[in-house]
Length: 206
Image (cartoon, rainbow, N blue to C red; front, side, top):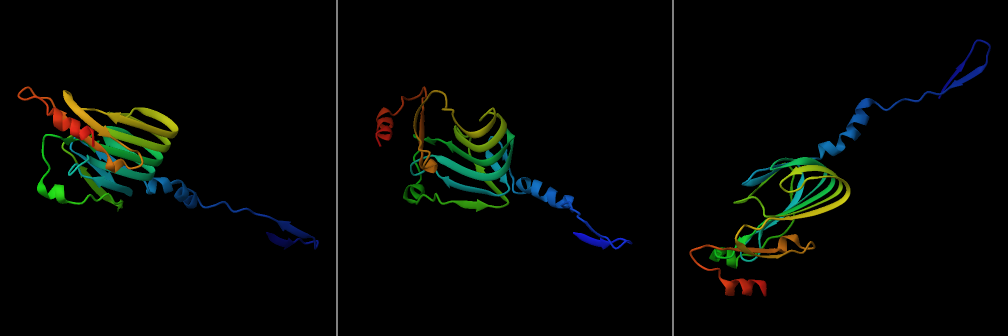
C-alpha cells in the first residue's frame, strides 16, 4: 500500500500487486522434469538415468532374474519401449531360470539380497534376453508404445505381460506383495531328449 498527499491536502491511498517473477513460475513448472528419469531399453540391458529406487533378485539358487524399479515424477522410455509416464511408476521385469542348467555351488550357498537401493545418476541391468515377464503399474498418466505396452491412459493403471518361450514347459508363481520373490522356471523341449517330467513336477509341487 502506498500513501500520498495531493496539493489540496487530500489523502490518497493506492494499492499495487506485484506479480511473481517469471523465473519462480518456471521453476515450479519444471520441478517434475528436474526429478524425472529416463530408461533406455535394449535387447541385452536396461539403462536408467536419473533418480530411481530399485531392488533385484538372482535366478539362483531358486527364483528368477528379477528387477523392480520405482520412480516418481516424469519417466521417459526409449529403445524397445517408447513413451512418457507421469506420477508413481513401478516396473517389475523378470527372465526365467533354465531348469536344465544347474546353479553354481557359490550361488546355491549364497544369500539372496532383496534390499532396496537408490540410484541418483545411472544404473544398468544386464540380461541375456529381453524379459519374458513384465508387470507395469502407474498412478498418474501414461502414453507408451512398444513390446511391453501400448496405452494412453489416466488414473491407476496396471498391466502384466507374459511371453513364455516357444516349445517349453513353464512354472510361474508371482505375488505382487513380493515381486522379487517370484519363481519363474522354464524347461525347453528339444528333439534330442524328452523333458524331465519328474523334475518339472517336483518344481511345481514346491
